[in-house]
Length: 368
Ligand code: ADE
Image 1 (cartoon, rainbow, N blue to C red):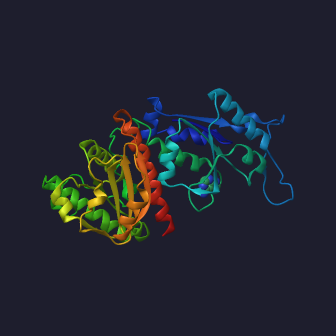
Image 2 (tube, rainbow, N blue to C red; image 1 turned 120 degrees about the horizontal axis):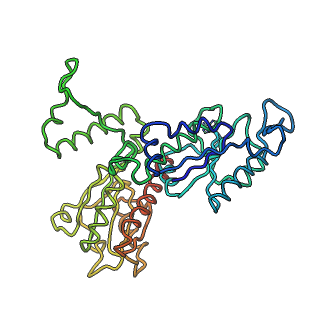
Image 3 (cartoon, rainbow, N blue to C red; image 1 turned 90 degrees about the horizontal axis):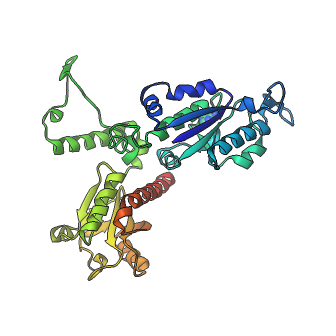
């Protein structure tokens, strides 16, 4: 990822890659951060870039032309236009989904304001996204830009040395992380929980999930109410099972995959509640019959959101029928997606679908 930060305080931005992980990422060429000094694009011989506000009032306003010239210079150098993010308390408050979405770009322009603000006309002309890092007012956008650089860079390949580590952190399931321990086993009379010394990975994973749930419930009840236990129910050939497995890994550390080719599982069915989210992964072209034709007797939800994902081009238009069948059983449709069955593109497709699904989940979470 290449970041171009338009600022009046370029020295501040250099600190973003001054230490730790981002410094290494910068040195290894995985990210680049270029601070572009707006002042050097002043049209004024005294290099002034601000002026009094029309209509009166306190403070100064950053003039349009300097900002515009700075941006044009960057675009000319890069050879194309880019998303231009203006850091402002009036923007949309940054969240993990937005971070992941920005991370999909090749390069980004981060525009930092100072003083009272920037002349509205240049904002109208160049800004694509207005982003705030929280509901408080900073003296300028630079700290916000650094926060964005930090959060976004975690998604640049190679920046975190453990590929899995970014996937499985706090916000993945809207759950906070479980507690961590390292040596010694006893410190100030406090023991490390014995399960962590047991070597039983299944037990450990279960304990960690439990702790994450407890912790979120106690510390962030708001987040807890918006957390989901995700289930992927699949049916069809093995390739569909692969899609289900890959997808659940992207979506949730604690997600469960249920293979409904297995009679036993079909017989058992499942009862799901409001804080479950069920993703049905079915073939786009049913072989003999659609699973929906013979939904297990004991498969039911209680206002449970569901997503229908078909693998391969849908040959038939059964959406309505499927929706009705599932809605009668207490499920409510969140979305329907189709994924290509071209194996070479599967990973990219799953990446895309998982982001879409998380966005959908976010929409119900924000409605709460
Ligand atoms: N500039 C001033 N306050 C800000 C905030 N909360 N987020 C982003 N940029 C800002």
